[in-house]
Amino acid sequence: MLEQAGVEAGESFTVNSNGSVAQNQNTSKWMQEVNTTIEFQKDARAAYEKYGPTAKTVNELENNVDKTLSKKWGEIEVAGTTNSSGNVEIKPDPNPYTREATRRHENVHRQTTMEGVAKYGKDTPAFKKWWYNPQRWASDEVKAYSAGISYLEEVLRTTKN
Ligand SMILES: [Zn+2]
Image 1 (cartoon, rainbow, N blue to C red):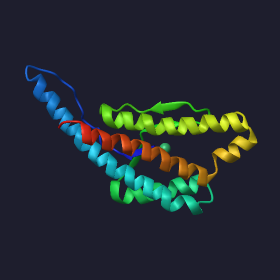
Image 2: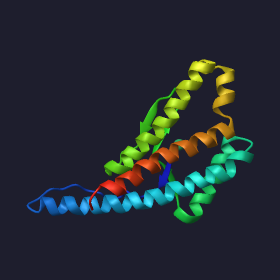
Image 3: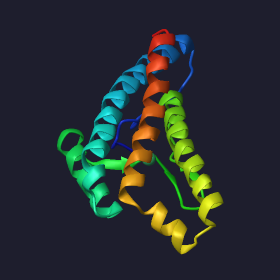
Image 4: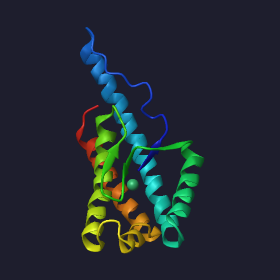
């Protein structure tokens, strides 16, 4: 999963005598980030939908998606990863909502990966051919971004600012 660089920069969660005010300001900031993240993730999903069907390799796909997103969003960095064994890594993110969106996104990749392992065997040539298929890769990204976006839109509907 990709995210806009620097979105969470400078976050702090200091509680002082005005603790509740600080918390409200954090919630407000977090909800702004939720809005921005939804917009970014919809662009990312659209890019995978655009380049997925014709990409020859995952590398070509990722480069095209990255180039497209960078034009609007600047430097792009990774928020989480899932490797070919299904191990998930989530980068530190003080915003509980975008962090949970990343977790749900990577969980889609993890589940898909474990299905592939069950079907083709761990790290077999057939698994690798399947795993690095750019069309499979793109459609799993579309599915993963959709899971994150659904969660964040639910947060917008249900969380008071
Ligand atoms: Zn992803």
